[in-house]
Image (tube, rainbow, N blue to C red; front, side, top):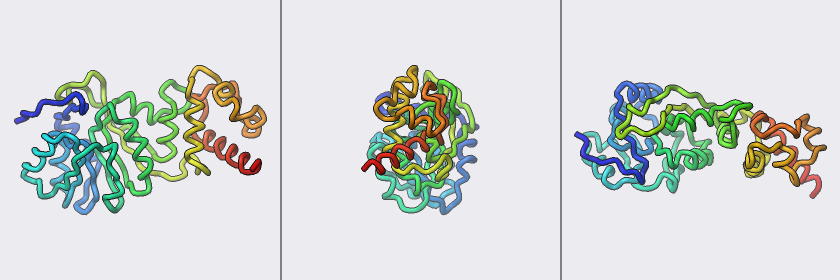
Length: 262
């Protein structure tokens, strides 16, 4: 029986649809010796079936009341419970190549996804429940309103696929938005290798700062018309029209230009 009241400040919406829970666990494909980390186990809807197939399961939970519940579960001896804010958690403290899974609070999903890019070399794959709109932005191709800085940064690190849509009724309490499950598999160099990732990130922030403006306007003082011409980029296009690999190429071009100037 669920006697825990969802806390809005923690963005809690507890998954309760058994079919969707089974689909997520099937997608994770847990093997007994896998290193699996679950973010936000909540009332253990996904935790229980994962733990049943694993020798050990790491869980990260901020809510002290839920942590106390986790300690009382019949399979608590299989759990390594990390209490605290996942945005402050050092995933490197858990050794080995990790599978990460979670029904992520919508209010922290984007900063958490950016944070996880720092651990990409330690990650085998990730499966997350997120706001459907965020998943569509993550997986978006150039040319549409969903495509943006989040799309390019995550596509630089991961091959991503939306696995299933999840309606509000699958949760208690029901959120006001649709959700979706995404699979993220690290794939180095899928859109090229940046000479300086921080420089690429700054370029993207500038390019997408004002979406209605052209690349020429958003990147003035940084990229000249000669630079655009050298890479065969039309500067009258908007940021959303440029493929991810072109941003990597432009960033590398600017890095080399600055090095030669120095």
